[in-house]
Amino acid sequence: MDKQTQAIIKSFEDTLSGQPWFGRAVYEILGEADESKVHTKPNGTEHSMIDLLWHMNTWAEFALGSLEKRSADEMKAIEANDWREIDPKTHTWKKGLEQLKATHNKIIEILKQKTDDSFLGDVVPLRKFNFRYMLNGLIQHNIYHLGQVAYVKKILS
Image (cartoon, rainbow, N blue to C red; front, side, top):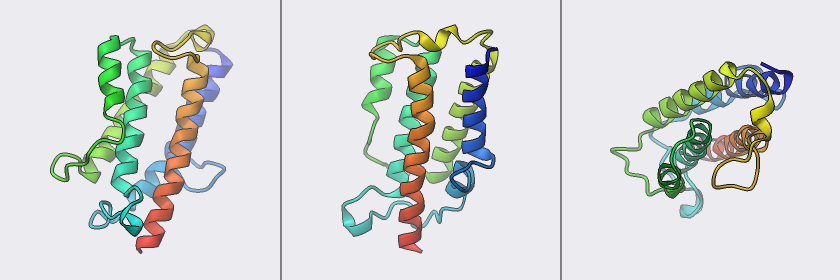
């Protein structure tokens, strides 16, 4: 494994469960959510914490599917779930958090199996950008939406 892939893995690990520069890790903050409040939409219109969590899951699953080279139909189905209608019986906070962790664990495991960085320059199927851009983008996406979750959490407490 080359240095760029190692750096991406470290960024995932730091931001998800380590000690990131920006503050507390993704799993730590998400793990503190009050499940009785995760469906509440501030001002009745903005995204709820659970909307944000399942949106994060969509793009983690998209990145995983891209790395696994899933079919175009499977990838389109994943993308179609973005900003899905949340069914409180199906889309629980616990299930969403478990899925986020499992998906990221799979992404990291795939990255650890890479023997060099050459794949990072390959174009992601159905997109015009490469794997380097997508993986770094997923890290940024997680941080961005974590900030939103933290803010909503604070408003509702």
